[in-house]
Length: 88
Image (cartoon, rainbow, N blue to C red):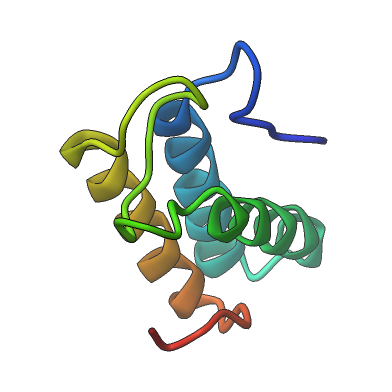
């Protein structure tokens, strides 16, 4: 499934779904969750604000604490299933 936080989507929702996919991949060790988790984490990284390093709820909004919190939590979940993402 395609998960997208752009347009009418919400950055917090995308991060929460990414976290769920990563947790499912980790807890079940089911390969069916691994690729969707990897794709969602990659998309989450692409949504990171280059100026502030944070995440935002939508393209129109400034980076905010809640969206950044959920995004970092989701990326940490990605580490559990050893998804490739930058160390920075």
